[in-house]
Image 1 (tube, rainbow, N blue to C red):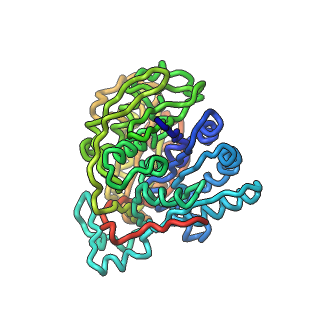
Image 2 (image 1 turned 90 degrees about the horizontal axis):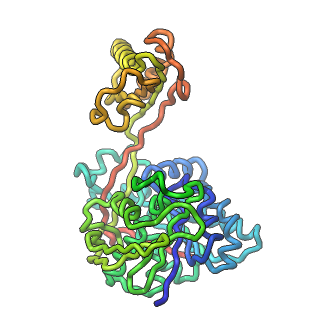
Image 3 (image 1 turned 45 degrees about the horizontal axis):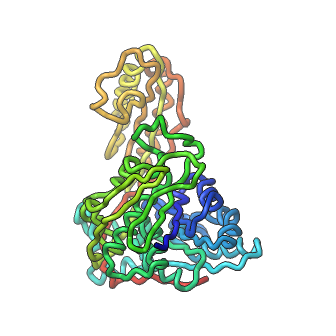
Length: 450
């Protein structure tokens, strides 16, 4: 049975720079998929584009293509990436300039149309509430603070770009799973209502969307025994026309792929295991059958799916006040007691100044910052404790004033401050997330070759 190999080269913007290079050069693959986008990333890119119309995409993608494009073209490896952010055309043009510099003729596909920021007022006027999925609140309540609004497209626009002959496909906001599902649809000519196969491809995409998290990175299962994480091999989907697939990695790389490790990735951001909803289908994770084949190979089969919904998810970000975080490190003896005392002193000073905050959050790193009350009482012999205090407020001035109250504790609070970590805190804008649904009939992907 015919198979294709789809390699994950990146799990997030900031992942290992060498990973996609090793995926391309380390063995046979047919596709390289790269995931750059998260919810807050879209807001950052929107701000970048507001300052510079040519910006708004993942700039790391361009020098990467300069390194790997010659090999990919030579070996017939197609690249699918959501590096376009809020400016897929700008990203595609930058890649085209690199290809021209290298003397390479490459067909670049663009998937756009997901950015509905400029259409929000029109949609609200038409009666679309774009209500928050968590609270039910209408978007109108925060409209004046919205910074970005992007529809999650699925695999089919990418398929259309591949059918146009694209060797590199650059998208804006699309589902992480769609990056991997699209090559399967294209290569195997799956139909739009073949729900079981679409669900299988979706789960394959979900399994490799976080890169090395499926091949031993960030793994709880015997993590100390996982070999050569310094040279971890990123996962590869070996996909078959019948919807079965194998998760593997290149030979000679570090890490490990087993069903136990893969299961950790499967439950990541899963939600209802019977109804994993994407624009392409609804996948039922409870139908997944797994088999360890040995030699870093895990086989998936038996996956069932159901028809897609008539809505797209919309990822909206909006400005929600300001925050700052300050830290001090206290040393033995009585490090924890000193840190707690410093927190009390700080809070009384903030209150005396009349500052108002929606929230003040204190963490004691080294004691209970990760596990909270489950951590229990610490040993009095702790060598050091980091006091970390964060504030959030709609008043930028109040947050700014807070930032000037951390350093004075060094000489006006408990003794043995050994570190003023990071210097004076910086005031940062809080970007909040607003998930909503929109009828598929209201938006259309724009697919073209550059």
